[in-house]
Length: 150
Image (tube, rainbow, N blue to C red; front, top):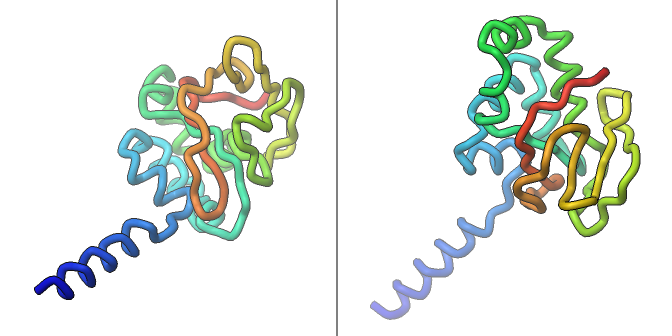
C-alpha cells in the first residue's frame, strides 16, 4: 500500500509540475476570460501557445470592464484593430519584473510601450498589479487597464 501511495504522489507531483504555456496559465488564473475571448476572436491563441518566449502584459476582466460595452463589442468585432491592441500588450523575450527598466520597449504590434518604475511598474497608463507569473514560453505581468496603441 505504501508503494502505491508513493507512486500516486509522484504522479500527482509530475502532473502539477507540467509546464503550461501563456494561454493555459492565464486561463487557469480565472480572471482573464475577456482576454481569452479576445485572443480567440483575433486568432492569436496558437501564437501565444508557440515557443516564444513572450512577455505579456495581461489585462484582467476588470480592466476590460473599464471599456464601455459598445466600444468593447466593436473592438471584438474588428479583427484587425483587435489584433493590433492585443499584440501591443506583448513584447518578444522573457522580461521578469526585476529586469524592467523605465523607458520605451518595442511591442510585437510594432509600436512602443512606455514602461515606468516609480512607485511600482507601469505600462503606458496601466499599473502592474501582479508580476512574474511564469509560463513555459514566457511570463505574464497582470495589468489593471487595457492599453491602446497610439
